[in-house]
Length: 384
Length: 176
Image 1 (cartoon, each protein chain N blue to C red):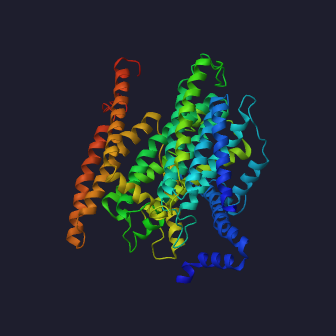
Image 2: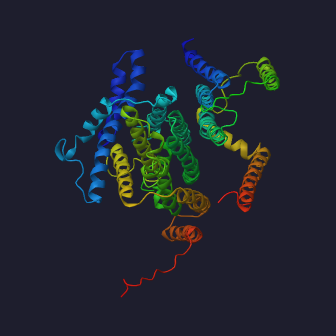
Image 3: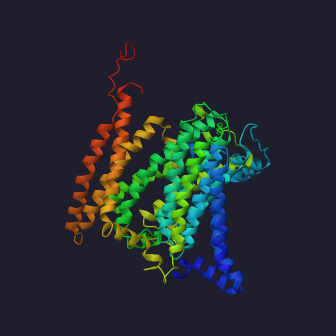
């Protein structure tokens, strides 16, 4: 069990020890990076297939079924198509910014994976400020989006880019604020330490503040990654795909990749922060990956279920609902921290205290945010 | 010597970014050049083993200040005195040049005086890498609690000010 658990660590160590000195340092750095990029590249291909298939089933269609068994090779066909397509740059566009933008979007997103603890001793870059660095790197994509929108010289692109920026800075706040209680309770910003603090099924999601925090964090993360239903930035019916209107071929593929990668990274971060990371019955990396995959499936499910939000609904949801809830959640975490939780009875009391703080907040926020009440519709003929 | 290579690379990157930010005519490109400069500085912090500072540098400067400038660029693009590229159409006036030179001279004087007075690092930084964020947090809550509270008061005042301005506009019927 333990050998299986540490199999990747063992392989990594033996490869590094096998090589002579200057090469071994390079291999030490390059090996995890290439494995992460390669694995998540394949995972990306698989998830696009899964998403198309699942959405198709939700909409009572069949989905891709031509290339390979059950259409499994569809992503490869798509990749070939993307690579061979003509790369069009509008004549009036700022060529440099237009070309650089997709790269600047994808690279920081890939760097996010270096911070995730994929298993016991399996964190590529164990920074002691991992959580903070994650948010810092994910905020770079705002600038990349602006570059894309501005460099394209298209009013729809610029409008889309402005929507993305407004959405990003609005949702960054609740996401960080819901992540804060975890840092408070675990007492560290290092992601591996946060996971270690959740050993023996003491996952943070099994606490009142953790449950609320997890749901709010997950929703905020979905908005940060620009997943549907928070994808007003590309609203095809309003601003014809927004900031990547003018992109074609491989550059468009990079935007697509970046969007999925940040969704993966956020599902990974939610797993590490709230769902106990690598803890569980299976080998640690499998635990982590399965939890991550489950979250991705939930994202696909939500995409198939909810319609796209309007701009004012999107902003209102972040500022008037998620943010106050996150503040109250922080207070709840503080109360929880100082309550004794040794016996079952004390646990119950702590849970009730948490609920006493959070449930009224939730109800009040729902009431305050409810739109104008519509009059009951009366029908002249249909009621007969 | 080879340990200094990353430093020189990052310093060159930051320097190129800073140079671009003040010389490029296109506002959007100048902004992105400024972002390169910020990233270079963050890299330098990483080399100095100040992880926390590096993360905050990216979070605040790239994630917030640059975005603020983005808003400034897009919202002030009224078409007056600018061509469609957002290039500054006005040739820089002598008065502006004077003010710029004065500001640069003052900042330069401060930097030079700091560098000449600095007598080199005495030993390793206290606490080492793992203490970074903890130490900053602790000193903010103990030694520097007054400046910290004053800063938060200032931010709250700014926040209320922003709300007041926005509410005033709504009441005058300028918005909605």
